[in-house]
Image (cartoon, rainbow over all chains, first blue to last red; front, side):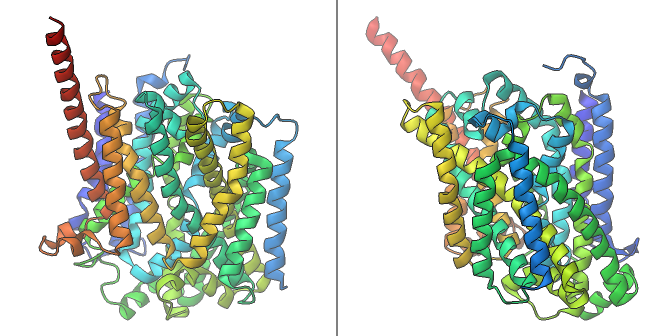
Length: 66
Length: 493
């Protein structure tokens, strides 16, 4: 349970917490200004995190879900 | 009538047809009308939830804001995924509780959790207040689409009125079943059209996405960095958090959650949801391309950026197809909003005031309210002058005020009582209303605060105030009760 709570918090720190540094970067990545690349990257990562969370969450193992 | 308008009209008729067809053979009591008899599987829930989030705002507001603001628009991509993470934790809990108590609307949830019908009434009213700007935004979108597709023959106001009428008929006929199937059609269309426009337009005008960005940066230096003041870093973070929170507590979202068949289905759905917000990226590409191609749009007119650029680039029939996709993005969430609002007022305001009302009467009142609410929203659509994104942020600011009471209600030993919940919500909503109607921001109210505090989104400031009031009043009310109990004991002995 602790692991998946941590996995739920990391995206907030990554996408928003690091923004002050992200906004300083002038580099284009994948044809986009860095801030757009950053939010796209985190959108994909969050999907991955949710996949991990779903599979690590013991509540999703139970057959009866009522 | 040009071919663009004909295509749009055909799609409108098709969506009404789908609505009527979906309804066939089903007894339309309130449960069936509003939560689909609680039998929607993973696929439909996914579509419905996604539909809630992919609205006109995505299509027109997204391109309008990127056209006008640049880097700050990026907040729209990241708030939804963050909202989905919170949903992973909270939505199944809401579902479980709703299932055990057979709840139909969002105010039911609060009334039941805090054992206070009055709180239910208050939540219903806040929900309605928050949904009105959101509904206005959909109608505004409809108006913009129809007006642009008529190449100016129909004014946006008249188009908004037509849109409201279409929406009303649609909801009255089919309820949630219509929404679900039109949502399927809508998602396919919007996906392909946005993808196509986002790639084709920069390629057509600039030879690629990076050249497009570089050319915009030359025209507007610093456009792809956050400004130091106004829509600054602290605005970005607070607006993202507020929208992520607000995105979780929309009344119509509760309806979608209730209609799921299991809590695991809800959790599983969250995995793919974030991907949906990537569609915005392509919408932004369109908005940025428009900067050099249809220059000079300002204020509410920036919402026209995508359609103006499309008209400049494509034949009318294709503009019609784009318009039809836009129509569906307004129709699906708009119908969900209208339905949730009317169910809410009928069940949680009318039924509480008139406890003797039968289920049939409540259903009837709910259906009769649909045109009334549509009329109110039409009034604001015709008379308001805000951009789509401003309206959206306002709606989020209101609805997010339900969050503290919602979260506290899941605590094992919840110390927050109905008094605290009521006081907190009223304080939060009042703060948002006050600043909106006075056209002020946190910064203009307290000019001596440091810049990063001044730029905070007002919804977040109100949310903090709300939480503080909720806690203080709860503790005070508890203390008062305890004192009275002690007094009562003393007078007995």
